[in-house]
Length: 192
Image 1: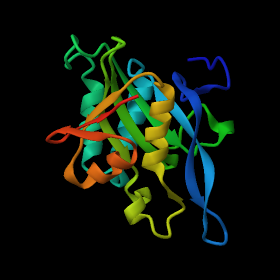
Image 2 (image 1 turned 60 degrees about the horizontal axis):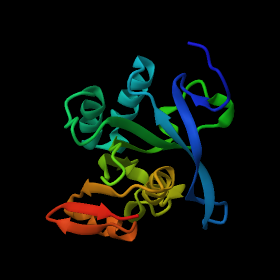
Image 3 (image 1 turned 180 degrees about the horizontal axis):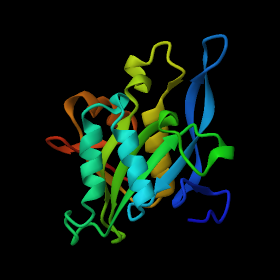
Image 4 (image 1 turned 135 degrees about the vertical axis):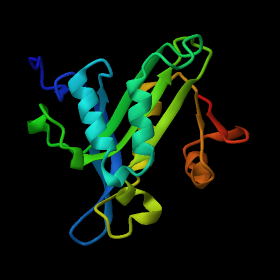
């Protein structure tokens, strides 16, 4: 497949914007740096193969398999509520290598069910960061605040849309820091 512009990654995957995360410099201090916020095409087999390759890495633990299954079964979610499933990622991929994302440079990945109705929220179905770069575990690692960067990139990409997500107990504080509130049980909501 032909690459049409420098804003394409991995054939149909596309560059959307820059997102801010923290990167450790030579003095071991964390400084803001840019990561590439990209979207994979769930209808392109090469992009699906890349998602599978990324999520099968040990660094994305057990949820990686769930995200692969979620991305694979495009039509099995409630079509009445959500019209469009999308897969986004943060990567440190070199901009000169936009033909093929190196799985080891993917810092975080998520799926979002986009609700086309203006008054209804989008749903973050799966949200994972590379285990090594989760802030509470990332002491001495080269990157931190990857989850915050990915969450902010989603909020910036859908500026007028609220979000809902179901959170595991260990992640409730993370989602609160991103502006989400507990609605009921494990359901969290971000209002615009």
